[in-house]
Amino acid sequence: MFESVTVIGAGRAGTTIAARLRERGVRTRDDGELRLLCVPDRAIAEVAGGIEPGPWLAHVSGATPLAALDPHVRRFSVHPLQTLTREGGPEQLDGAWGGVTAESAEAEERALWLAETLGLHPFALADDRRALYHAGAAIASNFLVTLYRVASDLVAPAGAPPQALVPLMTRTIENGFELTGPIARGDWETVERHRDVLRDTEYAQVYDALAEATRP
Image (tube, rainbow, N blue to C red):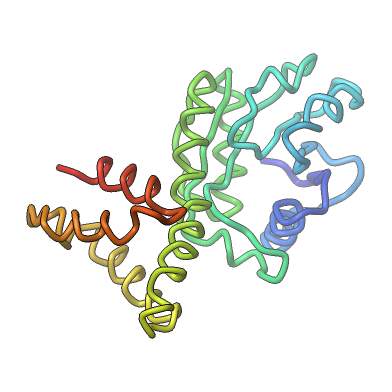
């Protein structure tokens, strides 16, 4: 579809995506047929506005609507639904899903090509539901880090090493997120004991909110 792509941005997304494109035989150069914006969300509109209309333009943001690419009309977006690190390579994209947003059949064809070239499983991402979608993605990824930190703070004083939680968290994912534990079995006495011991800690409200959200 595109023989050459200009990847704009050298952060975690930009370096990973550029490496994958080169791995798949796509040339990365300054005057590519596609200009792919891998810049912070706040910079997308400014960078797009500085590019002369003509080539195809796309961004990889999950939260930013296509309107940020104005005045370009040959445009689309592909959001890799994956967390990326600078240390990892293009294999970080393998098996991940990708949100595809396009306003025409022509744009959709190119967006799907990019998603599949990157190694993503594409799905249609509604442009007017991006904030909701991105909130869910943040909960799944960012708040997992928060949960691990909170849980680590609670088990460590009892003598349990925080890394002992990792197999538990991993198995929960491998089990298809099947709910177990006191809330699943309706053991509200145990839940109340949890609340009592946390009542005067900074995590009391966190536990209450999560317990309520977890309740069947």
